[in-house]
View 1 (spheres, rainbow, N blue to C red):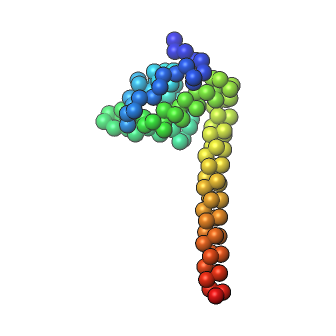
View 2: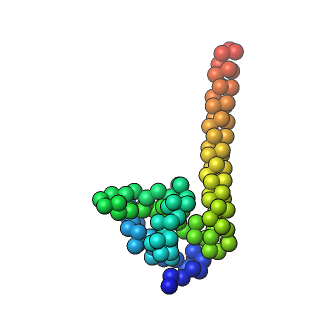
Length: 118
């Protein structure tokens, strides 16, 4: 049985571009059937599929799986709760980026206004 302890006990993620489902299973401490199930439950977990529907995960997928694993196994979230938490984090990042863009555009418009007033 795979260890369900904290993410701190998981092995380091090698410097590779793609990982097979077996590699991700070992890197994240969850069985392949669990990974396939999580793909159905978490829309932002979407590995590349190639020949014969073989899955190839990228580093960001592995990090997300570790985050999902931590929410479910360590913090006691339900699938729905973990999904909401992840979607909430994504929307906060998008809001932060939007706010930065708005501030930048406003500064540029104020500079243009100063030039026009001269």
